[in-house]
Length: 386
Picture (cartoon, rainbow, N blue to C red):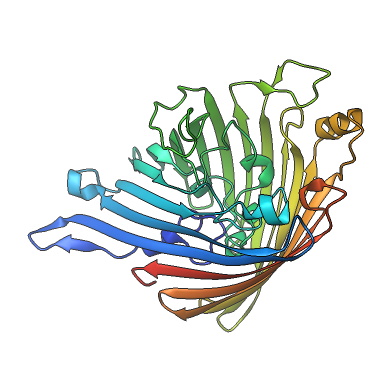
């Protein structure tokens, strides 16, 4: 039921990849319980430009449990829980000053569930999923982009910026109900997520509410498998609550909504190594969202043991933000662009090391802030070993 490539968007070795081992009780072969754990940590620093130079240590740990539905009489179903712990500093805010966030393990320090759901088939082609769901494990999944460290290659920044506390993605989840249809060549998903991720009083705390209690985030996506093994997807999203307009001269509240499209495909193969590429674009209503448009993508080459990649993430401020800045005689760049070069090497079945280099043009869209050069070293640990 889970989308194996995207539960932890952008990580080189995803926690989702650790959920494969099965432990069956000898006296009850039908009962199946899987345990998993992972830890991804970045030692990352700003070498030049941005806000200031310096290094920090970021990390995310996940502990998971999965119960096969055959244990309680629902074949093909699953119960899944993922509890995460985040150790963090505001590296992007304090050091780089960028708007897209250069590390996808940066988040508020906390221990809380990110997912807790039950899912299963209701017909041959349709399944249902209910509980606390990581939206990015089902929607806007960039399977090639997951190999990169930058956050925009997991879920587009025009989408991740939305909502009162972001949508239901790392580091805060929300309750949801979703339906999925899947055939041999295409699939479709519909999701109704609670509009506020985490607690309304304290975003660092998890909250279990009936989906739609604080309003709803409605998401739909259609995926089409390509002949060469790639995929094309298109999605739309919209919040039912209204949000304060950025342009204060207009006043009132506006609708937060958007759309995205992506294509990813293998380009060439040499022995076991593949050259793969992807492109993604997205838009969001700029009257209430800072980022109005985004374009990104890149290339990776390698196999399961090692992989090198280059990617670009280009986020553009919306018209309302630019008008408001001009009204206050404040200068603002329209676009922020992050260029990333990365290399991942699997040292052992349970450890991957990934040096990473990023160059951020116009960090935070701030003209007075010089371009930033960021270097980091990621360690990804997984149990059971893949």
